[in-house]
Amino acid sequence: MTAPASTARGWTLAARVTALFSLLACLVVGGLGLYLNGSAAAALELRADQALIGRVEHFRNLMHDLYNVEQMEQRPALFESMMGNEQDVRIFRRRGEAPFIQSNPDRLVPPEMEPIPVGTPVSSADIFTSTRADGVRVRWVSALAEVGKPGLGHDGGDTVEIVAAYVMVQEASMMRAYRWRIAGAAAGAVLITALLGFVLLRRGLRPLEDMSRRAAQITPDRLSMRLEQEGMPEELRRAAVSFNAMLDRLEAGYEHLSQFSGDLAHEIRTPINVLMGQSQVALGQRRTPEEYEQLLESNVEELQRLSRIVENIMFLAQADHATLAVECAPLDLADELGRIADYFEGIADERGMRFELDAQGVCCANLVMWRRAVSNLVINAVRYGEANTALRITARGDDAGSSIIVENRSDDATPHVMVRMFDRFYRGDRSRSAFTESNGLGLAIVKAIMALHRGTATVECPQPGWIRFTLSFPPAGR
Image (cartoon, rainbow, N blue to C red; front, top):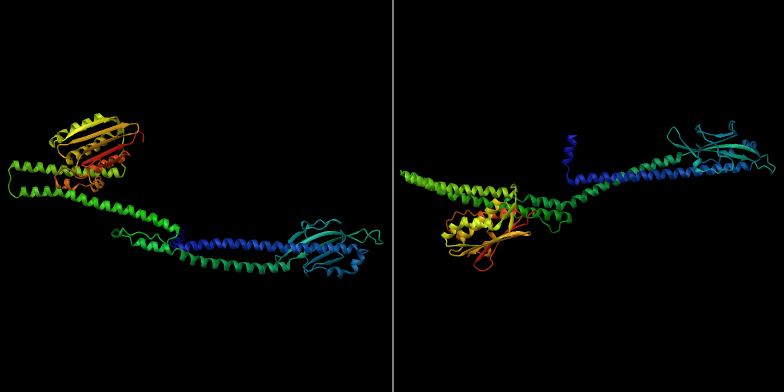
């Protein structure tokens, strides 16, 4: 069972379709041949029955015109010459007596038949069938005939049984030749159909082969290549469109992964270089215990920075694969935003910034994630907002959902910068030039948290010199 299955799997698509098409053609042509054979056989049998019935009725009429049976016995050649084939059977006898005229060259034995009464026409339903030793069909009929016409000077009243048979020798010969012609025509039709089908399939599958060669040329270095769509059949064009769309997604994901790997290496390289540089300088000469203690404190800070990067990356990876279960609960916006403002008030004071808080309503969200997302926006505003300005936090929540708006004065609100603000490891030029604790993952985490809540995070410039971040949470139950 394994070898034939393996052989079938190795067939080309054209060979498989050609084989199936040939099988289908064989079934159709074979069925048509059987139908024609049956129709021809039925037509020949009907013709034989009509000939047999006509002869029997002719015997009946002829015997009716005779005076008595002795006249038949005196002229047997008259009746023997009225049969068509030499093999045909005709038997004339009185009922219960031996035949007085009999022509049965093959000595065929009549089947058990009830004679058709005098005056009843012979029909096809009265005919019986038997088969000769060589397979030739024989049609039989038995009928009673009245000899003479009573009242017209004839004896009349004598009844004779006529047993006649039609041996279908010529029909059998015709059907044998006819079957051979049908078989030859069917074989030729199947062969020609298979050859033409194979040629047409090879021609029709040529665009698929071109598509396969084109797809084989796509490599990681040539992800921008796409399959040809123009001139393709509709079915293949739809497949090419879907395949190209998949390549678009793969290319975007590949570029995103490459960019992520480069940014990750860059972010990790900085604290590692700091750790190595400080350690090498410290080991260059003997240090006092206070200097070693200061070195260890600095190394711990860099290690904590590395730990935060790893923790953020792990959170984003889990969020990408939707492995985080988000359990939401109602939270009071005024209370929670008040706690966040109090927490960051000290850092804001250092830059001369003040909070303007206006919050009311309830938000349905995961409290830990909600605090992390809003805190990232607030600390981002404190770090990169203009000093000695206000930081506005506005929040509203009702049955239609809730929103938290964090806005501050900033000169970074350019369209080019705002488009990339939620990208991972993206930091604006000003934040890159200044030393901060940011690793460029804060806003990416905000976007991931909002995606887990089926909400949105947007950034816009409501007026020149201002930048606004908006978090929109859906209503409870969605």
